[in-house]
View 1 (tube, rainbow, N blue to C red):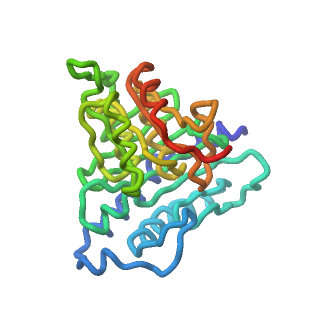
View 2: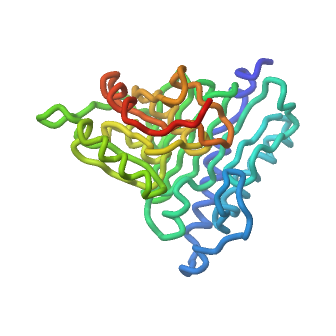
Length: 289
């Protein structure tokens, strides 16, 4: 059985929903501010300080992965906190990749701000183009986004049947653009968007911002710095399956960004080729390939 066929034999949606339910229960348990801010004292695979809530959320996801492996599935997990973990798969051979951010927007979560999400992508190859299934659960509004490659995207289990419509102001600029940057030193680049967009919105979670493009709530999205696969892998498929466009400008192939833990490229998303082209020329430093 090929890797692509193997991906299709698994109830990924069910596994993701169980993980999301477990994480949601953890997040909704009464917590003091100090409990939300608590750190484990370790540095995650992505290079950030690991919060207790991140570790607990990751445990919920890995409990589902352990069950899948016990049922005979071999794969490699790429996780925000634990790094790359082989579950019986040989890294130098074709294998299923499961790319996980237990809580995208964990700073929002620990401060009690709404948008923070579980993001899980399942791929049958090494790049963004190879993502076959994407799942994002935004714990703030309680919205579930999902997509299978070639089958369209869903919001709360219902297909997004209408292609999202791009809106522009009277002067031709995008009406609303979502931007993401965790570091205020990068925010000066938002000024370069003035000729592209009339209004900016910063939600604080790359996966959630991309999903807003899928629903046509914003007219595009751009990260102001290089993002990691764990932040974008699932949501970029959801955008594309909803009818939008996504690119990682550091690569000649727009979807050539690898599914690893390194921050290789910004991510941009739009609802038209012209808007994607406008966003792709905004100057953002790129990592060497």
